[in-house]
Amino acid sequence: MGFKTGIVGLPNVGKSTLFNALTRTAAAQAANFPFCTIDPNIGDVSVPDKRLDTLAEIANSKQLIPTRMTFVDIAGLVKGASKGEGLGNQFLANIRECDAIAHVLRCFDDGDVTHVEGRVDPIEDAEIIETELMLADLENIEKRLKNLTRKLKSTDKEAQEQVYLLEKANKALSSGKPARSIDLEADQIRAFQLLQLLTAKPILYVCNVDEASSSKGNKYSSLVEEMSTKSGASSVIISARIEEEISQLTDPEEMQLFLSEMGLNEAGLDRLIKSGYALLELQTYFTVGPKEARAWTIGSKTTAPKAAGVIHTDFEIGFIRAETVSYDDYVKFNGDQGAREAGKLRSEGKSYLVQDGDVLNFLFNN
Image (cartoon, rainbow, N blue to C red; front, side, top):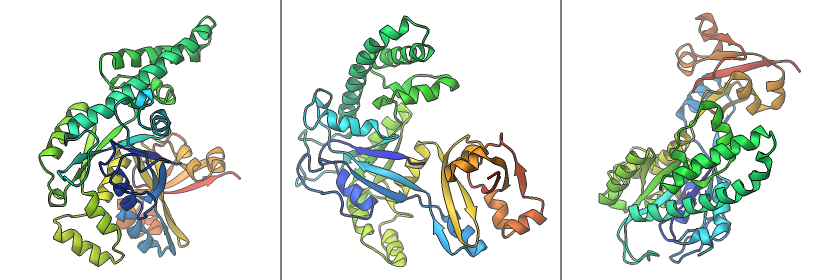
Protein backbone atom coordinates (compact mmCIF):
# COMPACT_ATOMS: atom_id res chain seq x y z
CA MET A 1 0.00 0.00 0.00
CA GLY A 2 2.03 2.95 -1.30
CA PHE A 3 1.55 6.56 -0.24
CA LYS A 4 3.20 9.34 -2.22
CA THR A 5 3.89 12.86 -1.04
CA GLY A 6 4.97 15.32 -3.72
CA ILE A 7 7.57 17.93 -2.75
CA VAL A 8 6.65 21.13 -4.60
CA GLY A 9 7.58 24.79 -4.54
CA LEU A 10 9.02 27.60 -6.61
CA PRO A 11 12.53 27.12 -8.04
CA ASN A 12 15.45 27.53 -5.62
CA VAL A 13 13.54 27.17 -2.34
CA GLY A 14 15.51 24.07 -1.26
CA LYS A 15 13.32 21.22 -2.55
CA SER A 16 16.11 19.12 -4.02
CA THR A 17 18.43 19.75 -1.07
CA LEU A 18 15.63 18.61 1.22
CA PHE A 19 14.92 15.57 -0.94
CA ASN A 20 18.60 14.58 -0.94
CA ALA A 21 18.69 14.66 2.83
CA LEU A 22 15.28 13.04 3.14
CA THR A 23 16.28 9.99 1.12
CA ARG A 24 19.87 10.00 2.39
CA THR A 25 21.04 10.11 -1.23
CA ALA A 26 22.34 12.56 -3.77
CA ALA A 27 19.78 11.41 -6.31
CA ALA A 28 18.42 14.90 -6.90
CA GLN A 29 20.75 17.48 -8.41
CA ALA A 30 20.79 20.51 -6.12
CA ALA A 31 21.91 23.65 -7.94
CA ASN A 32 21.39 27.38 -7.73
CA PHE A 33 19.35 27.82 -10.89
CA PRO A 34 15.71 27.23 -11.87
CA PHE A 35 14.54 23.86 -13.20
CA CYS A 36 17.60 21.86 -12.14
CA THR A 37 15.10 19.06 -11.46
CA ILE A 38 13.51 17.98 -14.74
CA ASP A 39 12.41 14.40 -14.18
CA PRO A 40 10.80 13.81 -10.79
CA ASN A 41 13.11 12.02 -8.36
CA ILE A 42 11.44 9.38 -6.24
CA GLY A 43 12.62 8.02 -2.90
CA ASP A 44 11.23 5.63 -0.32
CA VAL A 45 11.86 6.52 3.31
CA SER A 46 11.22 4.68 6.55
CA VAL A 47 8.63 6.14 8.90
CA PRO A 48 10.43 6.53 12.26
CA ASP A 49 8.66 4.59 15.01
CA LYS A 50 10.46 3.59 18.21
CA ARG A 51 7.63 1.18 19.05
CA LEU A 52 8.95 -1.22 16.41
CA ASP A 53 12.33 -1.47 18.18
CA THR A 54 10.62 -2.19 21.50
CA LEU A 55 8.39 -4.92 20.02
CA ALA A 56 11.34 -6.55 18.26
CA GLU A 57 13.33 -6.61 21.49
CA ILE A 58 10.50 -8.30 23.40
CA ALA A 59 9.95 -10.92 20.68
CA ASN A 60 13.68 -11.37 19.92
CA SER A 61 12.88 -10.69 16.27
CA LYS A 62 15.79 -11.27 13.89
CA GLN A 63 14.71 -8.54 11.48
CA LEU A 64 12.97 -5.16 11.74
CA ILE A 65 10.94 -3.92 8.77
CA PRO A 66 9.55 -0.38 9.20
CA THR A 67 6.65 1.00 7.22
CA ARG A 68 7.53 3.38 4.41
CA MET A 69 6.42 6.48 2.55
CA THR A 70 7.35 7.66 -0.92
CA PHE A 71 8.48 11.21 -1.58
CA VAL A 72 8.58 12.69 -5.09
CA ASP A 73 10.80 15.69 -5.82
CA ILE A 74 8.85 17.68 -8.42
CA ALA A 75 10.44 20.46 -10.47
CA GLY A 76 9.86 24.07 -9.48
CA LEU A 77 6.66 25.70 -10.65
CA VAL A 78 6.38 29.34 -11.71
CA LYS A 79 3.60 31.79 -12.51
CA GLY A 80 1.77 30.57 -15.58
CA ALA A 81 2.55 26.88 -15.04
CA SER A 82 -1.11 26.03 -15.62
CA LYS A 83 -0.71 27.59 -19.09
CA GLY A 84 2.55 25.81 -19.83
CA GLU A 85 5.02 28.41 -18.50
CA GLY A 86 8.32 27.08 -17.19
CA LEU A 87 8.06 23.32 -17.32
CA GLY A 88 4.29 23.59 -17.00
CA ASN A 89 1.68 20.88 -17.24
CA GLN A 90 4.18 18.03 -17.23
CA PHE A 91 4.74 18.65 -13.54
CA LEU A 92 1.11 19.32 -12.73
CA ALA A 93 0.62 15.72 -13.88
CA ASN A 94 3.35 14.59 -11.46
CA ILE A 95 1.49 16.29 -8.60
CA ARG A 96 -1.79 14.65 -9.65
CA GLU A 97 -0.22 11.21 -9.06
CA CYS A 98 0.61 12.04 -5.42
CA ASP A 99 -1.60 11.56 -2.36
CA ALA A 100 -0.47 14.74 -0.60
CA ILE A 101 1.62 17.85 -1.17
CA ALA A 102 4.61 19.00 0.86
CA HIS A 103 4.98 22.63 -0.19
CA VAL A 104 8.50 23.90 0.53
CA LEU A 105 8.64 27.63 1.23
CA ARG A 106 11.77 29.74 1.38
CA CYS A 107 11.95 31.21 4.87
CA PHE A 108 15.55 32.44 4.86
CA ASP A 109 17.53 35.45 3.60
CA ASP A 110 20.56 34.66 1.44
CA GLY A 111 21.82 36.97 -1.28
CA ASP A 112 23.84 34.14 -2.81
CA VAL A 113 20.75 32.06 -3.59
CA THR A 114 18.62 33.50 -6.36
CA HIS A 115 14.86 33.71 -5.86
CA VAL A 116 12.91 33.38 -9.08
CA GLU A 117 10.70 36.34 -8.05
CA GLY A 118 13.61 38.44 -6.74
CA ARG A 119 12.37 38.64 -3.12
CA VAL A 120 11.67 36.55 0.00
CA ASP A 121 7.96 36.25 0.78
CA PRO A 122 6.76 32.73 1.67
CA ILE A 123 3.10 33.76 1.80
CA GLU A 124 3.17 35.12 -1.73
CA ASP A 125 5.11 32.02 -2.84
CA ALA A 126 2.38 29.81 -1.38
CA GLU A 127 -0.29 31.86 -3.13
CA ILE A 128 1.49 31.56 -6.51
CA ILE A 129 1.57 27.77 -6.31
CA GLU A 130 -1.99 27.53 -4.99
CA THR A 131 -3.26 29.82 -7.75
CA GLU A 132 -1.59 27.75 -10.46
CA LEU A 133 -3.07 24.55 -9.05
CA MET A 134 -6.51 26.16 -8.83
CA LEU A 135 -6.32 27.37 -12.44
CA ALA A 136 -5.29 23.91 -13.56
CA ASP A 137 -8.23 22.40 -11.64
CA LEU A 138 -10.69 24.85 -13.18
CA GLU A 139 -9.48 23.99 -16.68
CA ASN A 140 -9.65 20.28 -15.91
CA ILE A 141 -13.19 20.57 -14.49
CA GLU A 142 -14.40 22.51 -17.54
CA LYS A 143 -13.16 19.80 -19.91
CA ARG A 144 -14.60 16.97 -17.82
CA LEU A 145 -18.01 18.57 -17.49
CA LYS A 146 -18.21 18.90 -21.27
CA ASN A 147 -17.33 15.22 -21.69
CA LEU A 148 -19.94 14.18 -19.12
CA THR A 149 -22.81 16.09 -20.74
CA ARG A 150 -23.72 13.24 -23.08
CA LYS A 151 -23.73 10.68 -20.27
CA LEU A 152 -26.11 12.82 -18.22
CA LYS A 153 -28.82 12.17 -20.76
CA SER A 154 -28.76 8.53 -19.71
CA THR A 155 -29.32 7.10 -16.24
CA ASP A 156 -25.59 6.83 -15.56
CA LYS A 157 -25.52 7.39 -11.78
CA GLU A 158 -21.72 7.51 -11.67
CA ALA A 159 -21.69 10.32 -14.22
CA GLN A 160 -24.36 12.19 -12.27
CA GLU A 161 -22.32 11.93 -9.08
CA GLN A 162 -19.19 13.14 -10.87
CA VAL A 163 -21.01 16.13 -12.29
CA TYR A 164 -22.40 17.02 -8.86
CA LEU A 165 -18.95 16.87 -7.25
CA LEU A 166 -17.22 18.68 -10.11
CA GLU A 167 -19.77 21.49 -10.02
CA LYS A 168 -19.37 21.78 -6.26
CA ALA A 169 -15.58 21.99 -6.64
CA ASN A 170 -15.96 24.47 -9.49
CA LYS A 171 -18.04 26.77 -7.30
CA ALA A 172 -15.41 26.74 -4.56
CA LEU A 173 -12.52 27.32 -6.97
CA SER A 174 -14.36 30.14 -8.74
CA SER A 175 -14.69 31.92 -5.39
CA GLY A 176 -10.96 31.54 -4.72
CA LYS A 177 -11.09 28.51 -2.44
CA PRO A 178 -9.26 25.20 -3.02
CA ALA A 179 -11.24 22.02 -3.65
CA ARG A 180 -10.13 20.64 -0.27
CA SER A 181 -12.27 23.31 1.42
CA ILE A 182 -15.65 21.87 0.36
CA ASP A 183 -17.79 19.82 2.73
CA LEU A 184 -18.52 16.24 1.70
CA GLU A 185 -20.77 13.48 2.97
CA ALA A 186 -18.94 10.34 4.11
CA ASP A 187 -20.17 8.36 1.11
CA GLN A 188 -18.87 11.03 -1.31
CA ILE A 189 -15.27 11.09 -0.16
CA ARG A 190 -14.01 8.16 -2.22
CA ALA A 191 -15.64 9.40 -5.44
CA PHE A 192 -14.24 12.88 -4.81
CA GLN A 193 -10.71 11.50 -4.33
CA LEU A 194 -10.99 9.66 -7.64
CA LEU A 195 -11.44 13.03 -9.39
CA GLN A 196 -7.75 13.68 -8.56
CA LEU A 197 -8.14 17.43 -8.29
CA LEU A 198 -4.84 19.08 -7.42
CA THR A 199 -6.24 21.43 -4.77
CA ALA A 200 -8.17 18.61 -3.11
CA LYS A 201 -4.95 17.05 -1.89
CA PRO A 202 -3.97 17.67 1.75
CA ILE A 203 -1.08 20.10 2.06
CA LEU A 204 1.84 20.44 4.46
CA TYR A 205 3.85 23.65 4.39
CA VAL A 206 7.56 23.03 4.91
CA CYS A 207 9.33 26.15 6.17
CA ASN A 208 12.94 25.95 4.98
CA VAL A 209 14.74 28.22 7.46
CA ASP A 210 18.37 29.26 8.03
CA GLU A 211 20.49 27.19 10.41
CA ALA A 212 20.12 29.63 13.32
CA SER A 213 16.31 29.36 13.11
CA SER A 214 16.12 25.55 12.91
CA SER A 215 14.80 25.00 16.44
CA LYS A 216 12.37 27.89 16.92
CA GLY A 217 11.75 29.29 13.45
CA ASN A 218 11.81 32.95 12.42
CA LYS A 219 9.55 35.80 11.27
CA TYR A 220 8.89 34.07 7.95
CA SER A 221 7.95 30.69 9.43
CA SER A 222 5.67 32.43 11.95
CA LEU A 223 3.71 33.93 9.06
CA VAL A 224 3.44 30.51 7.41
CA GLU A 225 2.24 28.91 10.63
CA GLU A 226 -0.46 31.57 10.95
CA MET A 227 -1.50 31.03 7.33
CA SER A 228 -1.62 27.24 7.66
CA THR A 229 -3.71 27.43 10.83
CA LYS A 230 -6.28 29.67 9.11
CA SER A 231 -6.50 27.40 6.07
CA GLY A 232 -6.72 24.15 8.05
CA ALA A 233 -3.36 22.93 6.75
CA SER A 234 -0.27 22.14 8.82
CA SER A 235 3.34 23.28 8.81
CA VAL A 236 6.76 22.09 9.92
CA ILE A 237 10.07 23.95 10.38
CA ILE A 238 13.19 22.50 8.79
CA SER A 239 16.63 23.73 7.81
CA ALA A 240 17.48 21.82 4.64
CA ARG A 241 21.16 22.63 5.09
CA ILE A 242 21.24 21.16 8.58
CA GLU A 243 19.32 18.10 7.44
CA GLU A 244 21.84 17.61 4.65
CA GLU A 245 24.64 17.64 7.24
CA ILE A 246 22.75 15.21 9.46
CA SER A 247 22.21 12.86 6.52
CA GLN A 248 25.99 12.41 6.23
CA LEU A 249 26.32 11.16 9.81
CA THR A 250 26.20 7.38 10.26
CA ASP A 251 26.91 7.11 13.99
CA PRO A 252 23.63 7.50 16.00
CA GLU A 253 25.48 8.98 19.00
CA GLU A 254 27.27 11.51 16.80
CA MET A 255 23.95 12.41 15.20
CA GLN A 256 22.27 12.91 18.58
CA LEU A 257 25.15 15.07 19.77
CA PHE A 258 24.87 17.22 16.66
CA LEU A 259 21.11 17.60 17.18
CA SER A 260 21.65 18.59 20.83
CA GLU A 261 24.19 21.24 19.82
CA MET A 262 21.62 22.67 17.41
CA GLY A 263 18.92 22.68 20.10
CA LEU A 264 16.87 19.96 18.37
CA ASN A 265 15.21 16.90 19.93
CA GLU A 266 14.98 15.02 16.64
CA ALA A 267 15.90 15.47 13.03
CA GLY A 268 13.56 17.79 11.17
CA LEU A 269 13.15 15.14 8.52
CA ASP A 270 11.69 12.75 11.08
CA ARG A 271 9.17 15.46 11.94
CA LEU A 272 8.44 15.95 8.25
CA ILE A 273 7.82 12.24 7.69
CA LYS A 274 5.60 12.01 10.77
CA SER A 275 3.69 15.13 9.69
CA GLY A 276 3.17 13.66 6.22
CA TYR A 277 1.94 10.44 7.81
CA ALA A 278 -0.52 12.36 9.97
CA LEU A 279 -1.55 14.57 7.04
CA LEU A 280 -2.69 11.51 5.10
CA GLU A 281 -4.54 10.23 8.20
CA LEU A 282 -2.48 7.07 8.27
CA GLN A 283 -1.78 4.75 11.16
CA THR A 284 0.40 1.75 11.90
CA TYR A 285 -0.23 -1.78 13.07
CA PHE A 286 2.40 -4.43 13.76
CA THR A 287 3.03 -8.11 13.17
CA VAL A 288 5.63 -9.53 15.53
CA GLY A 289 7.44 -12.86 15.75
CA PRO A 290 10.90 -14.41 16.09
CA LYS A 291 11.55 -14.07 12.35
CA GLU A 292 10.62 -10.40 12.00
CA ALA A 293 8.88 -7.45 13.58
CA ARG A 294 7.11 -5.43 10.91
CA ALA A 295 5.12 -2.21 10.71
CA TRP A 296 2.24 -1.89 8.24
CA THR A 297 0.58 1.30 6.99
CA ILE A 298 -3.20 1.61 6.82
CA GLY A 299 -5.69 4.46 6.78
CA SER A 300 -7.65 5.41 9.85
CA LYS A 301 -10.94 3.55 10.30
CA THR A 302 -9.65 0.47 8.45
CA THR A 303 -11.41 -2.81 9.20
CA ALA A 304 -9.46 -5.90 10.20
CA PRO A 305 -9.99 -7.72 6.85
CA LYS A 306 -8.80 -4.66 4.90
CA ALA A 307 -5.77 -4.39 7.18
CA ALA A 308 -5.03 -8.06 6.54
CA GLY A 309 -5.27 -7.41 2.81
CA VAL A 310 -2.30 -5.04 3.04
CA ILE A 311 -0.15 -8.10 3.77
CA HIS A 312 -1.75 -10.27 1.08
CA THR A 313 -5.10 -10.29 -0.72
CA ASP A 314 -5.61 -13.95 0.35
CA PHE A 315 -5.60 -12.77 3.98
CA GLU A 316 -8.53 -10.47 3.27
CA ILE A 317 -10.48 -12.93 1.14
CA GLY A 318 -10.16 -15.79 3.63
CA PHE A 319 -10.26 -13.66 6.80
CA ILE A 320 -11.63 -15.49 9.87
CA ARG A 321 -10.53 -13.29 12.79
CA ALA A 322 -7.66 -11.23 14.14
CA GLU A 323 -5.91 -11.97 17.42
CA THR A 324 -5.33 -8.48 18.77
CA VAL A 325 -3.18 -6.94 21.49
CA SER A 326 -2.68 -3.21 21.98
CA TYR A 327 0.92 -1.99 21.88
CA ASP A 328 0.79 -0.89 25.53
CA ASP A 329 -0.50 -4.28 26.69
CA TYR A 330 2.06 -6.15 24.56
CA VAL A 331 4.85 -4.20 26.26
CA LYS A 332 3.32 -4.30 29.73
CA PHE A 333 2.84 -8.08 29.70
CA ASN A 334 6.03 -8.86 27.79
CA GLY A 335 4.55 -10.27 24.60
CA ASP A 336 1.68 -12.36 23.25
CA GLN A 337 1.75 -15.07 25.89
CA GLY A 338 1.80 -12.67 28.80
CA ALA A 339 -1.02 -10.63 27.27
CA ARG A 340 -3.03 -13.82 26.70
CA GLU A 341 -2.60 -14.91 30.32
CA ALA A 342 -3.63 -11.45 31.51
CA GLY A 343 -6.76 -11.59 29.36
CA LYS A 344 -5.58 -8.75 27.15
CA LEU A 345 -5.43 -10.71 23.89
CA ARG A 346 -8.73 -10.38 22.04
CA SER A 347 -10.32 -12.08 19.04
CA GLU A 348 -11.77 -9.48 16.70
CA GLY A 349 -14.04 -10.08 13.72
CA LYS A 350 -14.70 -8.51 10.34
CA SER A 351 -16.22 -5.29 11.68
CA TYR A 352 -13.30 -4.44 13.98
CA LEU A 353 -11.63 -1.09 13.24
CA VAL A 354 -7.90 -1.51 13.70
CA GLN A 355 -6.34 0.93 16.17
CA ASP A 356 -2.95 2.59 15.84
CA GLY A 357 -0.33 0.40 17.50
CA ASP A 358 -2.33 -2.83 17.46
CA VAL A 359 -0.24 -6.00 17.33
CA LEU A 360 -2.17 -8.39 15.08
CA ASN A 361 -2.10 -12.03 14.10
CA PHE A 362 -4.54 -12.93 11.32
CA LEU A 363 -6.31 -16.26 11.01
CA PHE A 364 -7.65 -17.01 7.54
CA ASN A 365 -8.80 -19.80 5.24
CA ASN A 366 -6.32 -20.86 2.58
